[in-house]
Image (cartoon, rainbow, N blue to C red; front, side, top):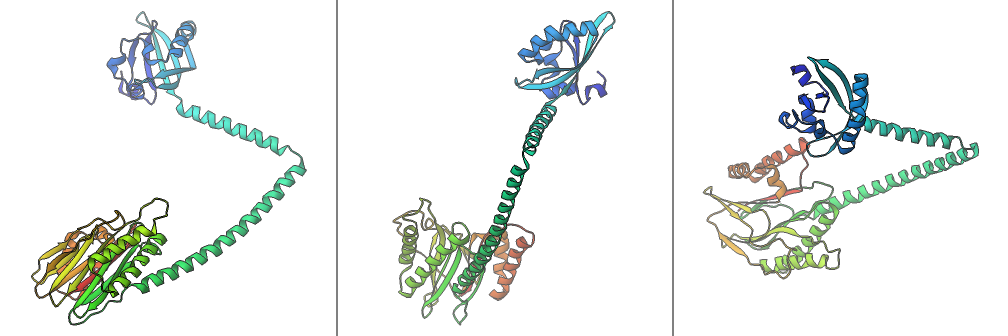
Length: 400
């Protein structure tokens, strides 16, 4: 078979008068999923649905023998998987070297059926519209009046929606401002220096950090990330922050603080819809007199400690996230250091944008923490400038 015919944009088939397939082009094979060896010297019934087989024997072969030509006859082919493929067939019959040959062209008509169906639908819609249009002028005026009334209602609803959205925006801006103000203010003294960064992905954030001086030379820090984003997560984080502030001012231990936060999160949703809310958190204390850090990591990304010798230690997860399981017994871990070092606490939105290797390189730079903070923020801003959807982000940089 010539290449142009083999790759023609339609199916091509050569049949003997008894229905034997003498030749078939690649287009038809690909359409039906057969190999050439599946069809050559086989009966054309291999390609037809049962109704089309009957139709072929009763109409197609008798008619082409009489008229030597078939135009736009509808056939239902079937592919190798038995699925129906509607098609139009065009055929010519002639005698070649004393043998009758029937050359058939198949044109798939999936799209045509779809178009015809859409045309019929459109025609029905048009007929219905014409019938409706033929109603009395009084009925038409009634419809127009009702439409005008609905339009006026819609305009009024849009105005109310705009007022509501503006009010919500003001309230969210106020809530965001309150959330930002409630964060602890960084400070620095001879023992410790603190720098902080906080950025929500939406109006409000589920990330939160807080820190306090517990006693001379001893400081408490917490950073947490509530599941989800937006108002609900922000309310949970604010509730936990208030409780943390109360507990640390009372002198509660690390174990007591994490246990109370866990209990609070369970109580918030005790009578809720059954959906559990949890948050990851790291709480730690730094005692500069003892040169010791005590910490509890509840499912949070590991805090990073960089000693003055350049060695990195990570305070990895020691407990599941708070709010996930009830009646947990929290246990703290401790870490001793010599002379001093640098501590980095963060939420997972930071490491989504900055690789661990890059972060370690930045932390090791012998520069003030404010300079290191600016470099980290620069990397975080790159995602935002490229339009990448980002998570809530916050971190604490602490020089001891």
